[in-house]
Length: 468
Image 1 (cartoon, one colour):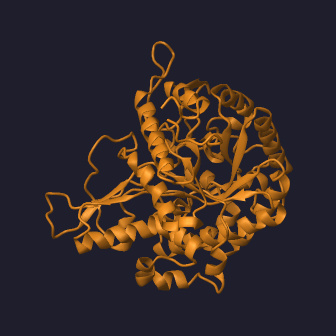
Image 2 (image 1 turned 135 degrees about the horizontal axis):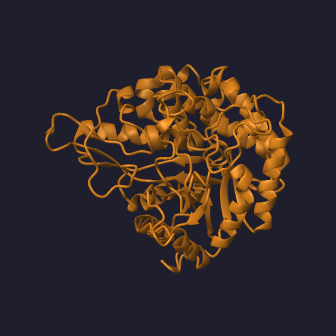
Image 3 (image 1 turned 30 degrees about the horizontal axis):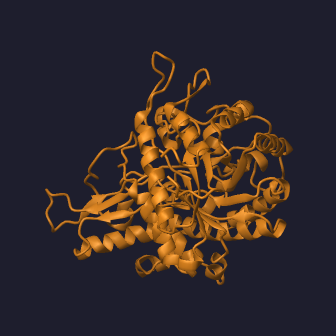
């Protein structure tokens, strides 16, 4: 396929708490995930990221593995509590030294890092003061961004401040499925707004330190496929869920406002935390938009219910179905077709639709677009030959990368693709039950085994997509 530009960035992604381990070493402070994972009933099998993939000690092995696969770009995250154990201004130099070693080794291997400041591991000390509900956390995040930019910005030239703010707000504070485990719609709206402002102040802080940095948000997005947009109830549900999932952050960044369908009903909850000047601040310049895409969602009418009772399904990340209840909606039913081990439908054309959508809607204002996460969970284990034959993962990746090529052909300014994930890891509330990696990890021995999908993706990267 010739649609990928010569400088297209092929990469893989991972996150600190999911792979690093060493949770109590070298002065690292507690994060909300350390606390949450030790709370009975919160994580599958009571598992945690205490050891995870032991990347903290095995990073050289993992970098060598990436190099052997031909990876040239790696999306990583900094662990805030490893650098600032209590989320204040007291540094832990051993944490800074670890990321110095990691980044220097990546660059020596010819791998360019994209750094995420916050991939959900908030210092517990900040959560004890209210977490992201407390505006003071935004101020702490600004100082943290400044410190990271000052120390690492000579080598890391691209940053995303917050990974998936929708998850931070709605899974962490809306329904308590993720850390810190709080359940309040009002708090979730406060957190959603504070992630908008947090992104803006962190972006400005990074640029104040180094003017050559490229900075953009990373947003988990989806398309909602509506069975009947002529049905006013379904049409309203479709508009609402697109607004709360996709447009909330996009409208804030590009238009300085939140979607009308949100404000019509929840203005009081949002206005309680919006300060004068916030929405002007929100329109910070973004050099790129990172999109994490896994599947589409459905808004529809199950046949057995008939036209009088709107219903549907949300297949977003690992959100259970009690999110819609926060807004007075009933969502059930099933998305037709094959699903991954997460129960998510396989909808590769959705990735093209999102990329083309933002170019169409933003026009000349559309910045560079990156797929910063895309992948699937399948539980393939090594066979008798010692190899992992994960044909379904390869098929999933091939269909989605091919769809990205089509989006580029249609004019979408897509500049890179980061596969999720480099290796199997701690999958949040699901513990180690689900495997997203193109490299298999034996969690007992920590042996890494590149799967067939890794070998396939290696050729895609080597040929700039020509093997598709």
